[in-house]
Image (cartoon, rainbow, N blue to C red; front, side, top):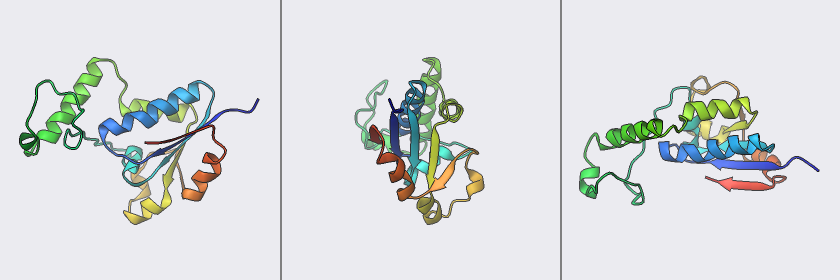
Length: 155
Protein backbone atom coordinates (compact mmCIF):
# COMPACT_ATOMS: atom_id res chain seq x y z
CA UNK A 1 0.00 0.00 0.00
CA UNK A 2 1.30 3.44 -0.89
CA UNK A 3 2.08 5.99 1.79
CA UNK A 4 -0.86 8.31 2.45
CA UNK A 5 -0.38 12.00 1.72
CA UNK A 6 -1.72 15.14 3.41
CA UNK A 7 -1.52 18.54 1.70
CA UNK A 8 -2.28 21.71 3.66
CA UNK A 9 -2.57 25.28 2.40
CA UNK A 10 -1.87 27.77 5.23
CA UNK A 11 -3.09 31.29 4.47
CA UNK A 12 -3.52 32.90 7.88
CA UNK A 13 -0.84 34.51 10.03
CA UNK A 14 -2.57 35.03 13.36
CA UNK A 15 -1.93 33.13 16.59
CA UNK A 16 -5.24 31.27 16.56
CA UNK A 17 -4.87 30.26 12.89
CA UNK A 18 -1.25 29.15 13.35
CA UNK A 19 -2.17 26.07 15.37
CA UNK A 20 -4.28 24.05 12.89
CA UNK A 21 -1.69 23.55 10.13
CA UNK A 22 1.10 22.59 12.54
CA UNK A 23 -1.05 20.34 14.76
CA UNK A 24 -2.61 18.56 11.78
CA UNK A 25 0.71 18.21 9.95
CA UNK A 26 2.63 16.88 12.95
CA UNK A 27 -0.17 14.44 13.78
CA UNK A 28 -0.36 13.21 10.19
CA UNK A 29 3.42 12.78 10.06
CA UNK A 30 3.30 10.78 13.31
CA UNK A 31 0.64 8.56 11.69
CA UNK A 32 2.91 7.93 8.72
CA UNK A 33 1.51 10.41 6.20
CA UNK A 34 3.81 12.14 3.74
CA UNK A 35 2.88 15.71 4.66
CA UNK A 36 3.37 19.09 3.02
CA UNK A 37 2.26 22.60 4.01
CA UNK A 38 2.13 25.36 1.41
CA UNK A 39 2.35 28.77 3.12
CA UNK A 40 0.92 31.63 1.10
CA UNK A 41 -0.04 35.26 1.72
CA UNK A 42 -0.34 35.92 5.48
CA UNK A 43 0.50 32.29 6.24
CA UNK A 44 4.13 33.18 5.50
CA UNK A 45 4.25 34.87 8.91
CA UNK A 46 4.31 31.36 10.39
CA UNK A 47 7.69 30.67 8.78
CA UNK A 48 9.49 33.71 10.12
CA UNK A 49 12.38 33.18 12.54
CA UNK A 50 10.98 35.79 14.89
CA UNK A 51 7.31 35.12 15.53
CA UNK A 52 5.08 37.95 16.69
CA UNK A 53 1.70 36.30 16.23
CA UNK A 54 -1.36 38.09 17.54
CA UNK A 55 -4.99 37.19 18.08
CA UNK A 56 -8.02 39.43 18.05
CA UNK A 57 -11.67 38.90 18.84
CA UNK A 58 -12.69 41.40 16.16
CA UNK A 59 -14.33 39.49 13.35
CA UNK A 60 -14.30 36.37 15.51
CA UNK A 61 -17.39 36.50 17.75
CA UNK A 62 -16.91 32.84 18.70
CA UNK A 63 -13.69 33.62 20.58
CA UNK A 64 -14.24 32.65 24.22
CA UNK A 65 -13.76 35.62 26.54
CA UNK A 66 -13.53 35.54 30.35
CA UNK A 67 -16.15 38.28 30.33
CA UNK A 68 -18.13 39.94 27.54
CA UNK A 69 -16.31 42.97 26.11
CA UNK A 70 -18.25 45.34 23.85
CA UNK A 71 -16.85 45.55 20.32
CA UNK A 72 -16.12 49.26 20.70
CA UNK A 73 -13.77 48.51 23.63
CA UNK A 74 -12.06 45.74 21.62
CA UNK A 75 -10.92 48.38 19.12
CA UNK A 76 -9.01 50.38 21.73
CA UNK A 77 -5.21 50.58 21.45
CA UNK A 78 -3.49 47.75 23.30
CA UNK A 79 -6.46 45.38 23.34
CA UNK A 80 -5.03 43.07 20.67
CA UNK A 81 -1.72 42.79 22.53
CA UNK A 82 -3.58 42.12 25.79
CA UNK A 83 -5.76 39.42 24.20
CA UNK A 84 -2.73 37.83 22.56
CA UNK A 85 -0.89 37.76 25.87
CA UNK A 86 -3.91 36.23 27.62
CA UNK A 87 -4.24 33.55 24.93
CA UNK A 88 -0.54 32.63 25.14
CA UNK A 89 -0.69 32.40 28.95
CA UNK A 90 -3.82 30.24 28.82
CA UNK A 91 -2.27 27.88 26.29
CA UNK A 92 0.92 27.56 28.32
CA UNK A 93 -1.09 26.94 31.52
CA UNK A 94 -3.09 24.21 29.75
CA UNK A 95 0.08 22.55 28.41
CA UNK A 96 -0.48 23.42 24.75
CA UNK A 97 2.76 23.51 22.80
CA UNK A 98 3.90 26.86 21.44
CA UNK A 99 3.95 27.56 17.71
CA UNK A 100 7.76 27.45 17.81
CA UNK A 101 7.62 23.98 19.38
CA UNK A 102 5.01 22.68 16.93
CA UNK A 103 6.92 24.08 13.97
CA UNK A 104 10.13 22.41 15.17
CA UNK A 105 8.23 19.15 15.66
CA UNK A 106 7.04 19.36 12.05
CA UNK A 107 10.60 19.92 10.81
CA UNK A 108 11.85 16.96 12.84
CA UNK A 109 9.02 14.81 11.42
CA UNK A 110 10.10 15.79 7.89
CA UNK A 111 6.95 17.74 7.08
CA UNK A 112 7.81 19.60 3.89
CA UNK A 113 7.15 23.31 4.31
CA UNK A 114 6.94 25.37 1.13
CA UNK A 115 6.89 29.17 1.12
CA UNK A 116 4.97 30.63 -1.82
CA UNK A 117 7.59 32.33 -3.96
CA UNK A 118 5.03 34.65 -5.55
CA UNK A 119 3.96 35.93 -2.12
CA UNK A 120 7.59 36.33 -0.99
CA UNK A 121 8.17 38.46 -4.10
CA UNK A 122 4.86 40.33 -3.79
CA UNK A 123 5.49 41.49 -0.23
CA UNK A 124 9.25 41.87 -0.82
CA UNK A 125 10.11 39.57 2.07
CA UNK A 126 13.77 38.87 2.75
CA UNK A 127 14.34 35.11 2.75
CA UNK A 128 16.85 35.54 5.58
CA UNK A 129 13.85 36.33 7.84
CA UNK A 130 12.53 32.79 7.40
CA UNK A 131 13.54 29.65 9.29
CA UNK A 132 15.98 27.11 7.86
CA UNK A 133 14.69 23.90 6.36
CA UNK A 134 11.91 25.31 4.19
CA UNK A 135 11.61 25.36 0.43
CA UNK A 136 10.32 27.99 -1.97
CA UNK A 137 7.95 27.26 -4.81
CA UNK A 138 4.83 28.32 -6.60
CA UNK A 139 1.32 26.96 -6.89
CA UNK A 140 2.45 24.47 -9.54
CA UNK A 141 4.92 22.99 -7.05
CA UNK A 142 2.14 22.56 -4.52
CA UNK A 143 -0.26 21.05 -7.06
CA UNK A 144 2.26 18.34 -7.96
CA UNK A 145 1.96 17.09 -4.39
CA UNK A 146 -1.67 18.04 -3.69
CA UNK A 147 -2.89 16.36 -6.87
CA UNK A 148 -1.71 13.02 -5.50
CA UNK A 149 -2.71 13.62 -1.87
CA UNK A 150 -5.35 11.63 -0.03
CA UNK A 151 -6.38 14.66 2.02
CA UNK A 152 -6.07 18.34 1.09
CA UNK A 153 -6.95 21.04 3.63
CA UNK A 154 -7.29 24.80 3.20
CA UNK A 155 -6.62 26.67 6.44
